Length: 449
Image (cartoon, rainbow, N blue to C red; front, side, top):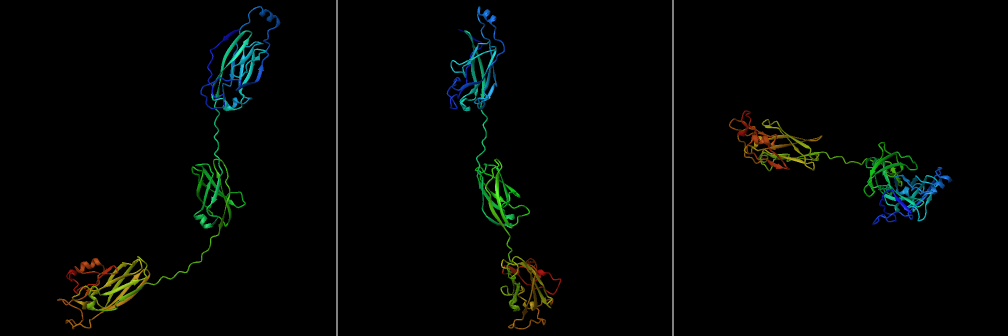
């Protein structure tokens, strides 16, 4: 038998003909894996007549010069395992009586006999398992036999991997509410706390709500699932609020459109609170102590007259105004202090001219204002009952070489320092206040007092 090879054999490069995904070395396809279907034998009148056959019988028969085409050139693993698809192999340039086989899909001894100039058949993966053939370029050889002559024709097609389908994550969304009952105002202000699980990880979750028994949602919020598919957040009422009644809340996983269970909750009417009775604020009070004081005591720092106020607004301004009655030699005292944390404030008023206590004799009006409260009081600086008589000034006021006498109530501690150098300030209740004297001579320098 003569053998004609038109092209060198191409090494087979296939793997996975068995069930395992990776083989240690490629193996040739066998009839155990591949089969044929859709066998077609053409009848195109190329069969020689008896006269031509007899004439050719006298000489040597021509060797076959067939060609092979494969369609498609590339096929997926799944399509190769489909009997109705597979790879179509067409062998042309035949003569009637030629036999066709291949080393991939035919069992030993099987072949197709041509009745014209061509035959066609389909190769497919007959195991039905796409994974039985790994992605590769699959080489095979078509063998044409004519009498004693044989022609081997190499052919190939590519097996491609199936596209991996991305499986949707398994989701089983569930939601629950921390509170089953909430007032309308709390729903609008603080919202309803919701938790859930079983959503697509790192995906958006739409929260919907509807009236119980009504499947038409009237508002929705968005929450974000974490890497474990869990949600936790707050769902607030729509802008126009909700009437009291029963409602349901459910969630939709955006990635899969899976709908969760429905969690029920009730919106209640806001309770009308009765106004609590309030205790009227105590009125501010002023205490003047003592209301009568000897002049000799009035000019002693740790004595003097204390003006104490209670029940002011804590931290409010408290204004003290002390005005002498009929004693033009003593100016009015005007000062403002702050009430403490208990609404209290106090100042101590005393004369700083200890060498002439009589300058302060007389009556004094006290006016104190804190907030809307205005309080009044009075005190009197009188002569000492144990005094040893007059110093020669009949009006009871001390005098200097010019015949002037008198005293001042300084307006602030700063002015006091300017009027009387080194005058001591008495601290009572955290506030320092003094009284000092001023001579009748208006042009006299205050620093000479």
